[in-house]
Structure formats: structure tokens, C-alpha cells
Amino acid sequence: ENYDPGSRAAVLSRGLIGSLGERVVVASPIYKHHFDLRTGECLETPANSVSAFPARVENGHVWVAV
Image (cartoon, rainbow, N blue to C red; front, side, top):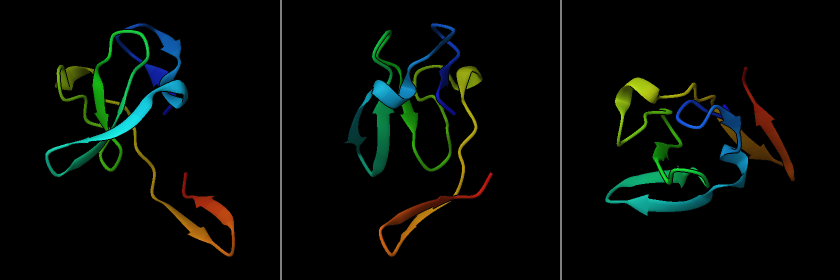
């Protein structure tokens, strides 16, 4: 999901990608909460987790299962 429940804004696509330990995360640009890209879990506030969708790159195209 692109929606950040903490700020109530569609901004996750503008966040920074990085890692925390073994997890690949996106940091929300507003409150800097970290969301696990595989599971959607919000590391700081699990109640604010978002949906995550399986994706793959094939022949230069990104496929997302929704």
C-alpha cells in the first residue's frame, strides 16, 4: 500500500528504501516509520501495518499480484 496510516497520507512510494537487520524496509517520508516491504509490518507501531503484495520483475516488466 502507498497509504501511511500514521500520517494519513499516500506517501510511502516517496519513502527511502533501506534495511534494518535482515529486513528490507521503506521509511515513510513524514514520520520516518519503517515498513517491511515483504510483510507490510510497521516496525515502530505494528498496529499501523499496511498490506503488502507479491511482486516480480519479468522481461523488464513489474508484475504485482493484488
